[in-house]
Image (tube, rainbow, N blue to C red; front, side, top):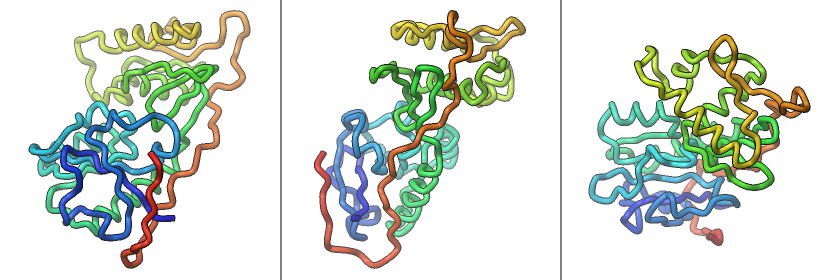
Length: 251
């Protein structure tokens, strides 16, 4: 199978030093990451995000599937570190050669394929790629931090998670700020869960912090924390010579 990638940029094609097409990959261009349709095979194709000032079109902080996104053209070490801390799959400087771009995208997708993409939190199916949850096939429209909050709580259902732990694991803060950011995000998360009549899912623990709870009239929900089989990631491992037999996938 010919490996594929999305080029996210105002420019229609990457410069030669980053052009994976020279190594036999098939390129799909999208001016903005938010123009990519949710669901389907495109969810499993890596995305090369152009971060050069003259052609950048996407705010990397709002990416829906950061695990399969590789930022390139980022010359600030501090900004690359921030991107990696925010769960971007890769962040590369301008002088990265195409053979290294290929190696990094392959490594990124191998790491993603090892992750549990889907997890059940009661009646909510959490999707790690979309950074969203859905019930009865309908997306909740979670903010990335709301998703991380629910994902972290689902790792230990029915167990109290302190506010300090949430700040450390979800907000990545080693200190307790003088804000009510956790409470605000929990409130917004509950409001979105309430639309699907599952606001009971996130409980306030009597000892402080939060936990995932069961339906008020049914006790413990049987599917908390259950991992689900993930769709396959594209087989993009290619280490050989360039190939001229490229096939495009219909968008």
